[in-house]
Image (cartoon, rainbow, N blue to C red; front, side, top):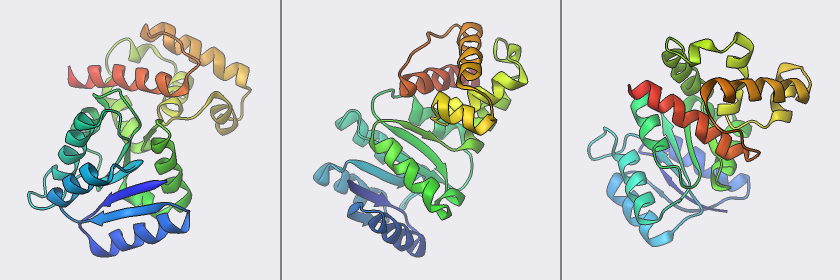
Length: 218
């Protein structure tokens, strides 16, 4: 699997390269600035891009904007964004384009190799990998309003796990309940939110996140 990595901190960039290569990824380029990232994405067409939100020269949202521009030029290109803190505006902007895999992970998570590598693979396959803290903040902001406020605590727990990209089987294992119970909670959630139920886990996650995005932007 071919990766382009963008991170301006040398030690972190070097560590991520070593980790990715240890897990069998082919790191085509590891760059430290927005212009370098733009060139690498255009010329190398990786299977997935792992991008720090803030890159030189602006040190604002240079990395995110480069990734979004690359997705406009190459629709559906998988992008996993890394950020030091939860920034809901960036999460919503990334999720606004429903095509292809997307992910938003806090940098603290990269020190958990299984979690980081799992997120890269999930996004490369066209899935969604959202940091639990990002989802928690989106849910907390939306929960004050209806109809999200109508969900039970158990349903909120299920939707948070759903939004992380987990299957019903994975949710059942995490919550120590049956898959049938999870399916019932899921049906209730979609009914209350007015969202169509889908067997496609990625579409289900994107639908939930899109709903949360609309609520957070209101």
